[in-house]
Length: 59
Image (cartoon, rainbow, N blue to C red; front, top):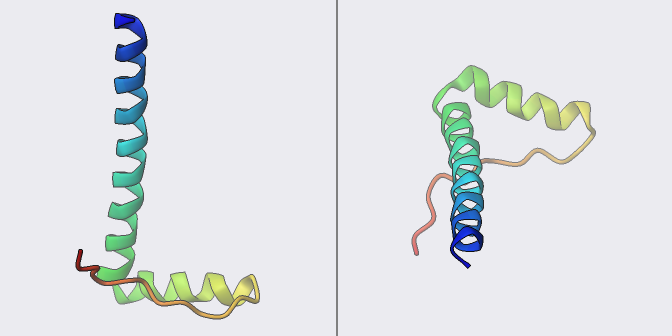
């Protein structure tokens, strides 16, 4: 049981870290106009409608 709990905690930490890294990348994209333009160009390359990053979500 103890090892199972440790594994669950470890996996949760790994998932949380992955989410934090993704959020940090999004913040970097939005904070730089060049990165924001590069983000928009990727939508054009894939022929998708251009999306805007969400600035803030109140909860």
